[in-house]
Length: 50
Image 1 (tube, helix red, strand yellow):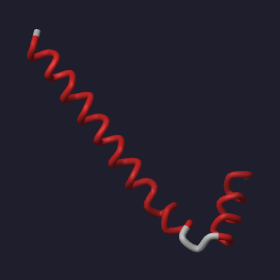
Image 2 (cartoon, rainbow, N blue to C red; image 1 turned 120 degrees about the horizontal axis):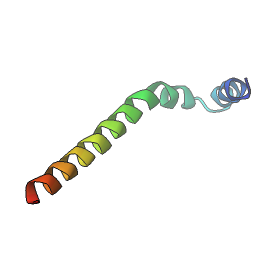
Image 3 (cartoon, one colour; image 1 turned 120 degrees about the vertical axis):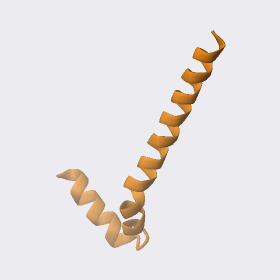
Image 4 (cartoon, rainbow, N blue to C red; image 1 turned 90 degrees about the vertical axis):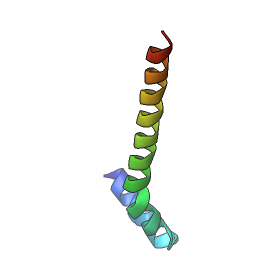
């Protein structure tokens, strides 16, 4: 409940906050995909060299 109230408070104080909150899942997804691709590629390279 505290998190919901703080988000509402920030949205009232800072007009650009809502746009950042709306884009956060997309940014998070891109970061997760990038880390997964890096780990997969790193694993593949280590398998290929052994």
